[in-house]
Image (cartoon, rainbow, N blue to C red; front, side, top):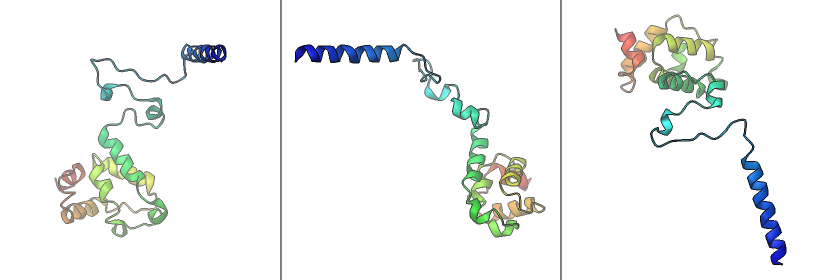
Length: 140
């Protein structure tokens, strides 16, 4: 019985050792003591998604638009029909131009002719939005 256990253990160690010497396509990140995890390079999945060079604000703007329920609102054409639904997008985009670009991309049926007035009104109505970058931009 000891002989079989020794053979099984030797086979297991040989298999683990053989797997450890084979490099993988996506090696695990390593951290040395002088760097934190936040300073590591972006992962391959981040680069593939186009977010590798995006600032946190730009990424959160995209995320806010991604979180919209497009099945319910994708066919709407009037900004006034989407007041509450768009608050998170207004609050997370770094500029009016970025917001407009994302809105055109994600909600192509939406009439953006009066977008500045719409956003100005939303900023006036919502205390949570007043101090955001987009609200600061339309207020000036």
